[in-house]
Length: 362
Image (cartoon, rainbow, N blue to C red; front, side, top):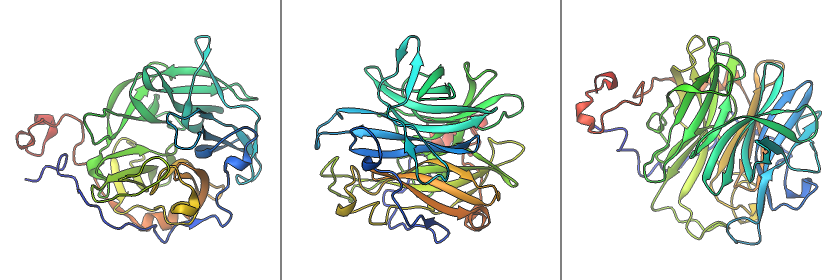
């Protein structure tokens, strides 16, 4: 029997954006020219609607050519009436934690939960990358940390409502010595103490991923269940692309969608068998886009319009700028196929032949 956890595709091949996706004709909607402070790249923006306004929290990197690490990085904060033209505040987001402001806050998501605006994020520090959850004070750029996790985790998102009386979050723990990386879930009674962690979606469940996957925007409640957008990464040893970050970029980030049961949001019921969004537009890839990395689409914001059908997707392209795309649920359902996870829980024996298709017997 083929081992799906080790025998992932080595060459995914050519991928294209689904015809159900419509890019905003004014893309990119946010670049380094649109912020009131020094910046090289403005991308991977969490976006959501709150009290009649659109709020955005983009990652901001300041580089000096190809120097690494970056001179500085953090998260901006802005507001808009239409979700396209944002007025950016003059300061970066400040997350307060035990008397300090957290450094190098990146890749944030915004979630509206119980009429409060929450920021989930990762921050870089001398003890590696750590995830966190913070609550907005209601004005300005100040947030108060509710929960800070341990390394190494990224792509933390909150569900916008409780599940069976508990708060729920998604996260992506990582280990540079053992990939692929997958999406996990956890529950909490108070947003501070988390437990019952288990596998949510495995990299092996995504046909075009062989390196890692991660949650994109907070899950969206629909009449068919919980919709999750996710990024999927494939590595190809024969792919050699020169970009600002490196002379040999071999990864590709694309976007897919998965649907989970309305009664049990940990149960996968459908998934797209191909990505819905791939870097192809001139501002997403190629020398004209001035990308830090190539072949990279990274969504951090998505939600339904008032018609409960039109889906906005905010995404970073090439770790450079922030873009917007649209589709509808009606169209999205047509490209999703019924699916179940290969492993319901992360308890599969290291020797796959002893698993015999039943992880609970391992």
